[in-house]
Each structure stands twice: as structure tokens, then as C-alpha cells.
Length: 77
Image (cartoon, rainbow, N blue to C red; front, top):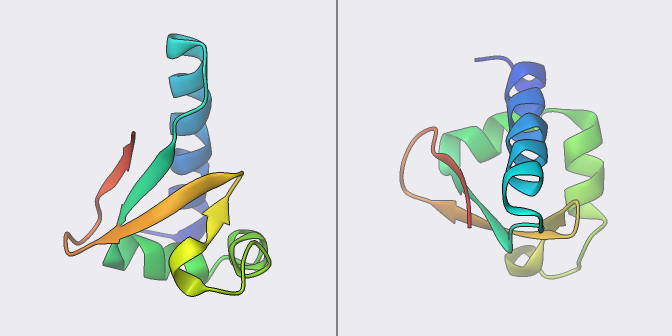
């Protein structure tokens, strides 16, 4: 799966969640392989790396990121 298509899927999922529920999700749950693929995308990596000094508190679009043991998990909470 390419980084760009995964990033587009993530952005579309966030947009759908907001349109459906009327509010932002609290966090993004990503599998470790999905996170690794997304970090290869420059725009995603720049935003995440500049969001916090502590790697455990990184954010994308002001949403907390939680990395799991699943391969390509992509969920919103």
C-alpha cells in the first residue's frame, strides 16, 4: 500500500467521521506498519514530528496517535 493512498484514506476517514458525527474524533489508532508507511510521507511526517517533543504525545491534525501491534489497523475513536 502506498504512503499517499494510505494518507488519503486517513484524511477521508477523518472527514467522514466529522460529517457523520458532527465532532472531531479524539484519537487515531494506527497499526505499526501503517504508521511506518505514513511516516514515509513527508507531509504527514513533518506534521507529526513537529507536533510534540515527546514521541508518545505526537498528533496529526490535532488528533492523538496511538500505535498498536496490528499491521495495518486504521481506526478513529
